[in-house]
Image (cartoon, rainbow, N blue to C red; front, side):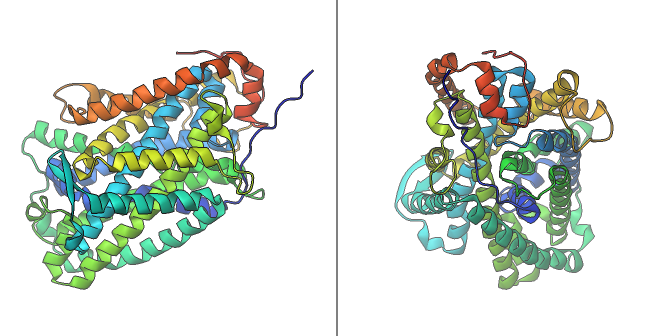
Length: 489
Protein backbone atom coordinates (compact mmCIF):
# COMPACT_ATOMS: atom_id res chain seq x y z
CA UNK A 1 0.00 0.00 0.00
CA UNK A 2 1.53 3.34 -1.09
CA UNK A 3 2.19 6.04 1.46
CA UNK A 4 0.05 9.18 0.98
CA UNK A 5 2.02 12.18 -0.22
CA UNK A 6 2.75 14.91 2.30
CA UNK A 7 0.05 17.58 2.50
CA UNK A 8 1.52 21.02 1.67
CA UNK A 9 1.09 23.33 4.63
CA UNK A 10 1.65 27.02 5.35
CA UNK A 11 3.58 28.57 8.22
CA UNK A 12 1.57 29.72 11.23
CA UNK A 13 2.63 33.27 12.04
CA UNK A 14 -0.42 35.62 11.99
CA UNK A 15 -1.76 36.95 15.30
CA UNK A 16 -4.95 38.82 16.24
CA UNK A 17 -3.62 42.27 15.29
CA UNK A 18 -2.32 40.88 12.02
CA UNK A 19 -5.70 39.39 11.14
CA UNK A 20 -7.62 42.56 12.02
CA UNK A 21 -5.19 44.71 10.03
CA UNK A 22 -5.45 42.29 7.13
CA UNK A 23 -9.26 42.51 7.12
CA UNK A 24 -9.82 46.19 7.92
CA UNK A 25 -6.90 47.34 5.79
CA UNK A 26 -8.25 45.36 2.84
CA UNK A 27 -11.74 46.80 3.23
CA UNK A 28 -10.91 50.51 3.34
CA UNK A 29 -8.66 50.51 0.28
CA UNK A 30 -8.66 53.51 -2.06
CA UNK A 31 -12.19 53.57 -3.48
CA UNK A 32 -13.17 56.37 -1.09
CA UNK A 33 -10.84 58.61 -3.10
CA UNK A 34 -11.26 57.39 -6.67
CA UNK A 35 -14.95 56.39 -6.61
CA UNK A 36 -16.50 59.03 -4.33
CA UNK A 37 -17.76 60.93 -7.38
CA UNK A 38 -19.61 57.86 -8.63
CA UNK A 39 -21.25 57.26 -5.25
CA UNK A 40 -22.48 60.85 -5.04
CA UNK A 41 -23.53 60.96 -8.69
CA UNK A 42 -25.66 57.85 -8.33
CA UNK A 43 -27.21 58.50 -4.95
CA UNK A 44 -26.23 61.85 -3.43
CA UNK A 45 -24.63 62.01 0.04
CA UNK A 46 -27.58 60.69 2.07
CA UNK A 47 -28.36 58.08 -0.59
CA UNK A 48 -24.72 56.95 -0.59
CA UNK A 49 -24.73 56.76 3.22
CA UNK A 50 -27.91 54.66 3.12
CA UNK A 51 -26.44 52.44 0.40
CA UNK A 52 -23.33 51.80 2.46
CA UNK A 53 -25.34 51.32 5.66
CA UNK A 54 -27.49 48.69 3.93
CA UNK A 55 -24.37 47.13 2.42
CA UNK A 56 -22.71 46.99 5.82
CA UNK A 57 -25.83 45.41 7.33
CA UNK A 58 -25.81 42.71 4.66
CA UNK A 59 -22.10 42.16 5.26
CA UNK A 60 -22.83 41.54 8.95
CA UNK A 61 -25.15 38.67 8.01
CA UNK A 62 -22.60 37.28 5.57
CA UNK A 63 -19.86 37.88 8.12
CA UNK A 64 -21.77 35.83 10.68
CA UNK A 65 -21.67 32.91 8.24
CA UNK A 66 -17.90 33.33 7.95
CA UNK A 67 -17.62 33.68 11.72
CA UNK A 68 -19.20 30.23 12.06
CA UNK A 69 -17.33 28.48 9.26
CA UNK A 70 -13.83 29.96 9.63
CA UNK A 71 -12.97 28.57 13.09
CA UNK A 72 -14.84 25.37 12.19
CA UNK A 73 -12.68 24.75 9.11
CA UNK A 74 -9.55 26.89 9.62
CA UNK A 75 -7.76 25.98 6.41
CA UNK A 76 -6.32 28.03 3.55
CA UNK A 77 -8.76 29.05 0.88
CA UNK A 78 -11.73 29.22 3.28
CA UNK A 79 -14.62 29.12 0.80
CA UNK A 80 -13.03 26.29 -1.16
CA UNK A 81 -13.08 24.09 1.94
CA UNK A 82 -16.60 25.16 2.98
CA UNK A 83 -18.10 24.42 -0.44
CA UNK A 84 -16.15 21.18 -0.77
CA UNK A 85 -17.29 19.88 2.62
CA UNK A 86 -20.87 20.90 1.86
CA UNK A 87 -21.30 20.12 -1.83
CA UNK A 88 -18.25 18.48 -3.40
CA UNK A 89 -15.43 19.28 -5.79
CA UNK A 90 -17.38 20.96 -8.58
CA UNK A 91 -18.98 23.63 -6.42
CA UNK A 92 -15.74 24.11 -4.48
CA UNK A 93 -13.97 24.97 -7.71
CA UNK A 94 -16.83 27.14 -8.98
CA UNK A 95 -17.10 29.32 -5.89
CA UNK A 96 -13.35 29.33 -5.30
CA UNK A 97 -12.55 30.43 -8.84
CA UNK A 98 -15.05 33.29 -8.75
CA UNK A 99 -13.69 34.41 -5.39
CA UNK A 100 -10.10 34.30 -6.60
CA UNK A 101 -10.96 36.53 -9.54
CA UNK A 102 -12.93 38.86 -7.28
CA UNK A 103 -9.79 39.29 -5.16
CA UNK A 104 -7.53 39.71 -8.16
CA UNK A 105 -9.89 42.25 -9.73
CA UNK A 106 -9.33 44.37 -6.61
CA UNK A 107 -5.60 43.80 -7.02
CA UNK A 108 -5.79 45.02 -10.63
CA UNK A 109 -7.89 48.02 -9.50
CA UNK A 110 -5.13 48.97 -7.07
CA UNK A 111 -2.42 48.50 -9.71
CA UNK A 112 -4.25 50.99 -11.93
CA UNK A 113 -4.91 53.35 -9.04
CA UNK A 114 -1.23 53.80 -8.21
CA UNK A 115 -0.70 55.64 -11.50
CA UNK A 116 -3.88 57.68 -11.03
CA UNK A 117 -2.91 58.87 -7.55
CA UNK A 118 0.69 59.63 -8.40
CA UNK A 119 -0.26 61.48 -11.60
CA UNK A 120 -2.54 63.72 -9.54
CA UNK A 121 0.41 64.56 -7.32
CA UNK A 122 2.97 64.62 -10.15
CA UNK A 123 1.19 65.47 -13.43
CA UNK A 124 4.41 65.24 -15.42
CA UNK A 125 4.40 61.42 -15.18
CA UNK A 126 1.56 61.21 -17.76
CA UNK A 127 3.96 60.47 -20.62
CA UNK A 128 4.30 58.02 -23.51
CA UNK A 129 0.64 57.39 -24.40
CA UNK A 130 0.08 53.89 -25.83
CA UNK A 131 -3.65 53.32 -26.45
CA UNK A 132 -7.12 54.13 -25.14
CA UNK A 133 -9.65 51.93 -23.35
CA UNK A 134 -13.00 53.19 -22.11
CA UNK A 135 -12.14 56.70 -23.27
CA UNK A 136 -9.04 56.88 -21.05
CA UNK A 137 -5.44 56.92 -22.28
CA UNK A 138 -3.09 54.21 -21.06
CA UNK A 139 0.41 55.61 -20.53
CA UNK A 140 3.59 53.55 -20.60
CA UNK A 141 4.70 55.40 -17.46
CA UNK A 142 1.61 54.18 -15.60
CA UNK A 143 2.22 50.61 -16.73
CA UNK A 144 5.80 50.90 -15.51
CA UNK A 145 4.53 52.01 -12.09
CA UNK A 146 2.04 49.12 -12.05
CA UNK A 147 4.81 46.68 -12.94
CA UNK A 148 7.17 47.95 -10.25
CA UNK A 149 4.60 47.96 -7.45
CA UNK A 150 3.01 44.68 -8.53
CA UNK A 151 6.49 43.20 -8.40
CA UNK A 152 7.02 44.62 -4.91
CA UNK A 153 3.71 43.23 -3.58
CA UNK A 154 4.48 39.89 -5.20
CA UNK A 155 7.93 39.78 -3.62
CA UNK A 156 6.73 40.67 -0.11
CA UNK A 157 4.16 37.87 -0.24
CA UNK A 158 6.64 35.47 -1.83
CA UNK A 159 9.23 35.71 0.96
CA UNK A 160 6.78 35.03 3.79
CA UNK A 161 3.41 35.82 5.33
CA UNK A 162 5.14 37.18 8.45
CA UNK A 163 6.52 40.03 6.38
CA UNK A 164 3.20 40.61 4.63
CA UNK A 165 1.31 40.66 7.96
CA UNK A 166 3.87 42.97 9.57
CA UNK A 167 3.63 45.40 6.66
CA UNK A 168 -0.16 45.31 6.93
CA UNK A 169 -0.12 46.22 10.62
CA UNK A 170 2.23 49.16 10.02
CA UNK A 171 0.25 50.49 7.05
CA UNK A 172 -3.18 50.10 8.68
CA UNK A 173 -2.11 51.93 11.84
CA UNK A 174 -0.67 54.75 9.74
CA UNK A 175 -3.87 54.97 7.70
CA UNK A 176 -6.08 55.37 10.78
CA UNK A 177 -3.90 58.15 12.17
CA UNK A 178 -3.76 60.12 8.90
CA UNK A 179 -7.46 59.82 8.00
CA UNK A 180 -8.51 60.87 11.49
CA UNK A 181 -7.01 64.32 10.86
CA UNK A 182 -8.95 65.26 7.73
CA UNK A 183 -12.18 63.53 8.72
CA UNK A 184 -12.27 65.58 11.94
CA UNK A 185 -11.48 68.69 9.86
CA UNK A 186 -14.43 67.98 7.57
CA UNK A 187 -16.87 67.31 10.41
CA UNK A 188 -15.84 70.31 12.51
CA UNK A 189 -15.06 72.83 9.76
CA UNK A 190 -17.79 71.84 7.32
CA UNK A 191 -21.48 72.70 7.21
CA UNK A 192 -24.45 70.31 7.21
CA UNK A 193 -26.30 72.57 4.77
CA UNK A 194 -23.86 71.43 2.08
CA UNK A 195 -25.38 67.95 2.25
CA UNK A 196 -28.43 69.34 0.44
CA UNK A 197 -29.62 68.01 -1.97
CA UNK A 198 -29.55 64.80 0.00
CA UNK A 199 -30.22 62.61 -3.03
CA UNK A 200 -28.96 62.76 -6.59
CA UNK A 201 -32.38 62.02 -8.09
CA UNK A 202 -35.96 63.07 -7.40
CA UNK A 203 -38.95 60.82 -6.92
CA UNK A 204 -39.12 57.54 -5.07
CA UNK A 205 -37.98 55.42 -8.01
CA UNK A 206 -34.96 57.62 -8.70
CA UNK A 207 -33.90 57.76 -5.06
CA UNK A 208 -34.26 53.99 -4.57
CA UNK A 209 -32.45 53.34 -7.83
CA UNK A 210 -29.51 55.47 -6.73
CA UNK A 211 -29.31 53.75 -3.35
CA UNK A 212 -29.47 50.35 -5.08
CA UNK A 213 -26.66 51.35 -7.48
CA UNK A 214 -24.39 51.97 -4.49
CA UNK A 215 -25.67 48.98 -2.53
CA UNK A 216 -24.94 46.40 -5.25
CA UNK A 217 -21.26 47.41 -5.27
CA UNK A 218 -21.03 46.69 -1.53
CA UNK A 219 -19.30 43.31 -2.10
CA UNK A 220 -16.43 45.14 -3.78
CA UNK A 221 -16.03 47.89 -1.18
CA UNK A 222 -16.63 45.68 1.86
CA UNK A 223 -14.86 42.53 0.75
CA UNK A 224 -11.80 42.06 2.91
CA UNK A 225 -13.21 40.72 6.18
CA UNK A 226 -13.13 37.32 4.48
CA UNK A 227 -9.35 37.53 4.07
CA UNK A 228 -9.30 36.18 7.63
CA UNK A 229 -10.91 33.01 6.29
CA UNK A 230 -8.23 32.68 3.61
CA UNK A 231 -5.38 33.01 6.10
CA UNK A 232 -6.93 31.01 8.96
CA UNK A 233 -4.50 28.14 8.42
CA UNK A 234 -1.63 30.55 9.11
CA UNK A 235 -2.93 31.66 12.52
CA UNK A 236 -0.48 31.43 15.40
CA UNK A 237 -0.83 28.22 17.38
CA UNK A 238 -1.91 30.08 20.53
CA UNK A 239 -4.68 32.06 18.77
CA UNK A 240 -8.11 30.71 19.90
CA UNK A 241 -10.19 29.70 16.83
CA UNK A 242 -13.28 31.47 18.19
CA UNK A 243 -11.43 34.78 18.07
CA UNK A 244 -11.29 34.57 14.28
CA UNK A 245 -15.08 34.93 14.17
CA UNK A 246 -15.01 37.97 16.44
CA UNK A 247 -12.30 39.64 14.36
CA UNK A 248 -14.38 39.20 11.21
CA UNK A 249 -17.34 41.03 12.75
CA UNK A 250 -15.15 43.72 14.32
CA UNK A 251 -13.55 44.52 10.96
CA UNK A 252 -16.98 44.87 9.28
CA UNK A 253 -18.15 47.26 11.99
CA UNK A 254 -14.97 49.33 11.67
CA UNK A 255 -15.16 49.59 7.88
CA UNK A 256 -18.87 50.50 7.93
CA UNK A 257 -18.24 53.32 10.39
CA UNK A 258 -15.33 54.56 8.28
CA UNK A 259 -17.34 54.71 5.03
CA UNK A 260 -20.36 56.41 6.60
CA UNK A 261 -18.42 59.08 8.48
CA UNK A 262 -16.15 59.79 5.51
CA UNK A 263 -19.02 60.32 3.06
CA UNK A 264 -20.61 62.73 5.54
CA UNK A 265 -17.32 64.60 6.08
CA UNK A 266 -16.76 65.01 2.34
CA UNK A 267 -20.34 66.19 1.74
CA UNK A 268 -20.06 68.78 4.51
CA UNK A 269 -16.95 70.42 3.04
CA UNK A 270 -18.87 72.20 0.26
CA UNK A 271 -21.51 71.77 -2.47
CA UNK A 272 -20.99 68.15 -3.37
CA UNK A 273 -22.29 68.52 -6.93
CA UNK A 274 -19.22 70.64 -7.73
CA UNK A 275 -16.75 67.81 -7.06
CA UNK A 276 -18.38 64.70 -8.55
CA UNK A 277 -16.62 65.05 -11.91
CA UNK A 278 -13.17 65.53 -10.43
CA UNK A 279 -10.36 63.03 -10.91
CA UNK A 280 -10.05 62.54 -7.15
CA UNK A 281 -13.21 64.09 -5.65
CA UNK A 282 -12.33 63.49 -2.00
CA UNK A 283 -9.01 65.30 -2.25
CA UNK A 284 -10.54 68.11 -4.31
CA UNK A 285 -13.36 68.58 -1.79
CA UNK A 286 -10.97 69.22 1.10
CA UNK A 287 -8.73 71.40 -1.06
CA UNK A 288 -11.63 73.60 -2.19
CA UNK A 289 -13.16 73.88 1.28
CA UNK A 290 -10.10 74.73 3.33
CA UNK A 291 -7.61 75.98 0.75
CA UNK A 292 -5.05 73.85 2.54
CA UNK A 293 -2.45 71.94 0.52
CA UNK A 294 -1.65 70.09 3.74
CA UNK A 295 -5.13 68.55 3.95
CA UNK A 296 -5.02 67.60 0.27
CA UNK A 297 -1.65 65.96 0.75
CA UNK A 298 -2.94 64.12 3.82
CA UNK A 299 -5.85 62.75 1.77
CA UNK A 300 -3.45 61.63 -0.95
CA UNK A 301 -1.08 60.12 1.61
CA UNK A 302 -3.98 58.20 3.18
CA UNK A 303 -5.05 57.10 -0.30
CA UNK A 304 -1.60 55.68 -1.02
CA UNK A 305 -1.50 53.89 2.34
CA UNK A 306 -5.03 52.52 1.83
CA UNK A 307 -4.08 51.42 -1.66
CA UNK A 308 -1.26 49.28 -0.32
CA UNK A 309 -3.22 47.86 2.64
CA UNK A 310 -5.99 46.77 0.30
CA UNK A 311 -3.63 45.53 -2.38
CA UNK A 312 -1.50 43.53 0.03
CA UNK A 313 -4.53 41.98 1.75
CA UNK A 314 -6.37 40.93 -1.38
CA UNK A 315 -3.25 39.70 -3.08
CA UNK A 316 -2.54 37.47 -0.09
CA UNK A 317 -6.13 36.22 0.05
CA UNK A 318 -6.35 35.52 -3.68
CA UNK A 319 -3.19 33.44 -3.64
CA UNK A 320 -4.53 31.32 -0.77
CA UNK A 321 -7.67 30.50 -2.75
CA UNK A 322 -5.61 29.49 -5.79
CA UNK A 323 -3.34 27.48 -3.51
CA UNK A 324 -6.31 25.66 -1.97
CA UNK A 325 -7.63 24.71 -5.43
CA UNK A 326 -4.22 23.37 -6.41
CA UNK A 327 -3.58 21.54 -3.14
CA UNK A 328 -6.98 19.89 -3.43
CA UNK A 329 -6.03 18.70 -6.93
CA UNK A 330 -9.04 20.37 -8.51
CA UNK A 331 -6.76 22.23 -10.94
CA UNK A 332 -3.12 21.59 -11.94
CA UNK A 333 -1.33 20.78 -8.70
CA UNK A 334 1.61 23.14 -9.29
CA UNK A 335 -0.68 25.84 -7.87
CA UNK A 336 -0.83 23.91 -4.59
CA UNK A 337 2.89 23.72 -3.85
CA UNK A 338 4.77 25.70 -1.21
CA UNK A 339 8.23 27.23 -1.37
CA UNK A 340 10.76 24.95 0.40
CA UNK A 341 12.41 27.88 2.19
CA UNK A 342 9.68 30.51 2.69
CA UNK A 343 6.71 28.20 3.21
CA UNK A 344 4.52 30.35 0.92
CA UNK A 345 2.30 29.29 -2.02
CA UNK A 346 4.97 30.53 -4.41
CA UNK A 347 3.43 29.45 -7.73
CA UNK A 348 0.01 30.85 -6.83
CA UNK A 349 1.71 34.11 -5.85
CA UNK A 350 3.52 34.36 -9.19
CA UNK A 351 0.31 33.65 -11.12
CA UNK A 352 -1.52 36.33 -9.12
CA UNK A 353 1.23 38.81 -9.94
CA UNK A 354 0.91 38.11 -13.67
CA UNK A 355 -2.91 38.39 -13.62
CA UNK A 356 -2.72 41.65 -11.67
CA UNK A 357 -0.40 43.26 -14.17
CA UNK A 358 -2.45 42.04 -17.15
CA UNK A 359 -5.50 43.67 -15.55
CA UNK A 360 -3.54 46.89 -15.01
CA UNK A 361 -2.85 47.03 -18.75
CA UNK A 362 -6.53 47.93 -19.29
CA UNK A 363 -5.91 51.29 -17.64
CA UNK A 364 -8.13 53.61 -15.64
CA UNK A 365 -10.91 53.37 -18.24
CA UNK A 366 -11.49 49.86 -16.85
CA UNK A 367 -11.47 50.79 -13.14
CA UNK A 368 -15.25 50.89 -12.73
CA UNK A 369 -15.48 47.72 -14.80
CA UNK A 370 -13.25 45.94 -12.30
CA UNK A 371 -15.49 47.27 -9.51
CA UNK A 372 -18.64 45.88 -11.13
CA UNK A 373 -17.19 42.57 -12.29
CA UNK A 374 -15.37 42.13 -8.99
CA UNK A 375 -18.60 42.81 -7.08
CA UNK A 376 -20.39 40.20 -9.16
CA UNK A 377 -17.70 37.56 -8.57
CA UNK A 378 -17.49 38.26 -4.86
CA UNK A 379 -21.30 38.13 -4.56
CA UNK A 380 -21.15 34.66 -6.16
CA UNK A 381 -18.69 33.59 -3.45
CA UNK A 382 -20.82 35.14 -0.69
CA UNK A 383 -23.83 33.23 -2.04
CA UNK A 384 -21.73 30.06 -1.84
CA UNK A 385 -20.73 30.72 1.78
CA UNK A 386 -24.34 31.28 2.86
CA UNK A 387 -25.39 28.12 0.99
CA UNK A 388 -22.57 26.11 2.61
CA UNK A 389 -23.56 27.37 6.06
CA UNK A 390 -27.15 26.18 5.62
CA UNK A 391 -26.11 22.84 4.17
CA UNK A 392 -23.41 22.05 6.73
CA UNK A 393 -25.81 22.72 9.58
CA UNK A 394 -27.89 19.86 8.19
CA UNK A 395 -25.22 17.47 6.91
CA UNK A 396 -22.40 18.02 9.41
CA UNK A 397 -23.89 19.00 12.79
CA UNK A 398 -21.11 17.02 14.49
CA UNK A 399 -18.37 19.45 13.40
CA UNK A 400 -17.01 21.63 16.19
CA UNK A 401 -18.33 25.18 15.98
CA UNK A 402 -16.27 27.41 18.30
CA UNK A 403 -18.34 30.41 17.20
CA UNK A 404 -22.12 30.01 17.08
CA UNK A 405 -23.89 33.08 15.64
CA UNK A 406 -27.23 34.18 17.06
CA UNK A 407 -30.38 34.15 14.95
CA UNK A 408 -30.45 30.50 13.91
CA UNK A 409 -31.34 29.89 10.25
CA UNK A 410 -32.37 33.51 9.72
CA UNK A 411 -28.75 34.67 9.40
CA UNK A 412 -27.63 32.44 6.49
CA UNK A 413 -31.00 32.84 4.75
CA UNK A 414 -30.78 36.64 4.83
CA UNK A 415 -27.17 36.41 3.59
CA UNK A 416 -28.25 34.06 0.79
CA UNK A 417 -31.12 36.33 -0.24
CA UNK A 418 -28.92 39.44 -0.14
CA UNK A 419 -26.23 37.89 -2.33
CA UNK A 420 -28.87 36.60 -4.76
CA UNK A 421 -30.45 40.05 -4.96
CA UNK A 422 -27.11 41.64 -5.88
CA UNK A 423 -26.48 39.03 -8.57
CA UNK A 424 -29.97 39.43 -10.00
CA UNK A 425 -29.75 43.22 -10.14
CA UNK A 426 -26.41 43.01 -11.94
CA UNK A 427 -27.80 40.61 -14.56
CA UNK A 428 -31.25 42.08 -15.21
CA UNK A 429 -31.21 44.61 -18.09
CA UNK A 430 -32.45 48.07 -17.18
CA UNK A 431 -31.89 47.65 -13.43
CA UNK A 432 -29.48 50.58 -13.29
CA UNK A 433 -26.66 48.35 -12.05
CA UNK A 434 -26.43 45.83 -14.91
CA UNK A 435 -22.99 44.71 -16.02
CA UNK A 436 -21.95 46.94 -18.89
CA UNK A 437 -21.34 45.86 -22.46
CA UNK A 438 -18.83 45.25 -23.87
CA UNK A 439 -15.94 45.73 -21.44
CA UNK A 440 -17.44 44.30 -18.24
CA UNK A 441 -18.92 41.29 -19.98
CA UNK A 442 -15.65 40.71 -21.85
CA UNK A 443 -13.67 40.75 -18.59
CA UNK A 444 -16.12 38.31 -17.00
CA UNK A 445 -16.14 36.06 -20.07
CA UNK A 446 -12.33 36.03 -20.31
CA UNK A 447 -12.03 35.04 -16.67
CA UNK A 448 -14.70 32.35 -17.05
CA UNK A 449 -12.92 30.87 -20.07
CA UNK A 450 -9.65 30.83 -18.14
CA UNK A 451 -11.44 28.98 -15.33
CA UNK A 452 -12.84 26.46 -17.82
CA UNK A 453 -9.30 25.92 -19.13
CA UNK A 454 -7.90 25.30 -15.64
CA UNK A 455 -10.79 22.95 -14.86
CA UNK A 456 -10.12 21.03 -18.08
CA UNK A 457 -6.37 20.83 -17.44
CA UNK A 458 -7.06 19.44 -13.98
CA UNK A 459 -9.38 16.67 -15.23
CA UNK A 460 -6.74 13.87 -15.40
CA UNK A 461 -5.51 14.76 -11.92
CA UNK A 462 -9.03 14.77 -10.47
CA UNK A 463 -9.67 11.37 -12.03
CA UNK A 464 -6.59 9.90 -10.31
CA UNK A 465 -7.43 11.36 -6.90
CA UNK A 466 -9.90 9.55 -4.65
CA UNK A 467 -12.42 11.64 -2.77
CA UNK A 468 -10.93 10.35 0.51
CA UNK A 469 -7.50 11.64 -0.50
CA UNK A 470 -8.98 14.96 -1.54
CA UNK A 471 -10.71 15.17 1.85
CA UNK A 472 -7.29 14.98 3.46
CA UNK A 473 -5.75 17.55 1.13
CA UNK A 474 -8.55 20.11 1.29
CA UNK A 475 -9.69 19.73 4.89
CA UNK A 476 -6.64 18.40 6.70
CA UNK A 477 -7.60 17.38 10.22
CA UNK A 478 -10.33 20.00 10.48
CA UNK A 479 -13.27 18.63 8.60
CA UNK A 480 -13.47 14.94 9.29
CA UNK A 481 -14.77 12.66 6.59
CA UNK A 482 -16.86 14.34 3.92
CA UNK A 483 -19.56 12.60 1.95
CA UNK A 484 -18.51 10.96 -1.31
CA UNK A 485 -20.02 13.75 -3.37
CA UNK A 486 -17.11 14.34 -5.69
CA UNK A 487 -19.40 15.99 -8.20
CA UNK A 488 -18.40 17.92 -11.29
CA UNK A 489 -20.40 20.72 -12.90
